[in-house]
Amino acid sequence: MEHLVQDGKFDHHGYLNMELLRFTTAGSVDDGKSTLIGRLLYDSKSIFQDQLEAIEKSSKSRGEDYVNLALLTDGLRSEREQGITIDVAYRYFSTPKRKFIIADTPGHIQYTRNMVTGASTANLAIILVDARHGVVEQTYRHSFIASLLQIPHIVICINKMDLVDYSKEKYDEVVEQFRHFASKLDVQDVRFIPISALLGDNVVDRSTKMPWYEGPTLMYTLETVHIGSDHNLIDTRFPVQHVIRPMSNEYHDYRGYAGRVAGGVLKPGDEVMHLPSGITTKIAAIKTIDGDLAEAYPPQSVTITLEDDVDISRGDMIVRENNVPKIGQDIDIMVCWMDDKNPLRLNGKYSIRHTTRDARCVIKEILYKVDVNTLHRIQDVDSLALNEIGRVKIRTTVPLFYDEYRRNRNTGSLIIIDEGSNTTVGAAMIIE
Image (cartoon, rainbow, N blue to C red; front, top):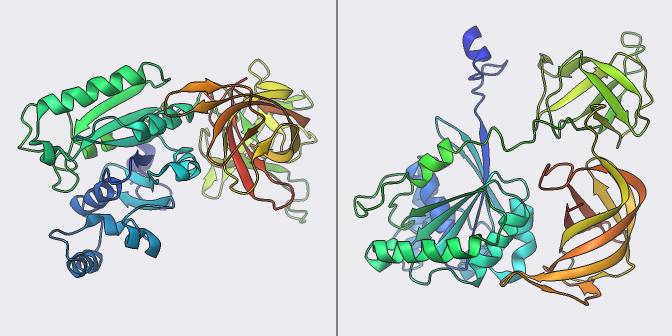
């Protein structure tokens, strides 16, 4: 057992400690997202017999000729009735190689904010394209959002190949269409897979009907895509979430700093610096509920103790002296507006949360909004309505410790909160 713990196969409790891949699905309405996820769950034997029997029964009662696997994910009654996905549906499953969290996001334009929510933590995005229709406006919009959110890996699943007689020409046409558009986007790793979610071609099992396609199946891609370097392991960033002071006789002078590692690798003995004070000290220990760690890296949640007594509060950050984030109050962001009642307005005042730091801000300038279907910039705007995405300059009440979003998704993102209702009204990516 001991060598398996060291190899990372089991944790301290003897549970399998597999890598977790978060992925999101996107595509136009009726491109087959929910069917694809149902197929992944069904063919990887990740659903129970009674669930299968329930959807078989439901499919028959709806007069459908086949088992409608989409019913596995469309959980809201209104979704099932309309045959569409409205909210973000999260599904969990695992194979012997990896654990997965799927965010099934809606295809409709009015649910752009839901896609942003589901995709914000994803390692990989599956974008479905109907082989009959090729690349459509929704494909452009979803690809732009995936690029904006810096999702490291994008898989274009060209679905419904059974309806175009498994034509290689049709597949090549869609690949060429997408490549032409993707050249304008900031995406690093794009892969193309021809599939039929309904019949299972190239989803989990290799299709015999497309001998011209020699690449991997979707499941093999999900199990093997390299995600170890998706996190920033260079810039040490540890936003302090909570200061632990037990105040008991046993731990009279104990002071630990709990939080989630947002970047870099931390080890006991490392020289670190506290922001905002600039005081340097060393890490004494890194603790978890399972015991002390020899090192910590994203996205682990740990408690750090320091050799010196430094006055540290929630919202402060532990970094390295020769590698500090940007510190400032005038910040340039791309924001997706999520409030259906009130638009984002010039000179509007909002609360924000950045890592573990709470502050307030004022909207100083709206530089432009993006037409997400054409990528054109629309200038001379003084507001952003629901689901609109634009570039905005804000001024915050306190300095933030931040990186550009493209460098670190954790320290480069923030949420905007309405002060009256306390609801999240915007998701933002820091540009500079």
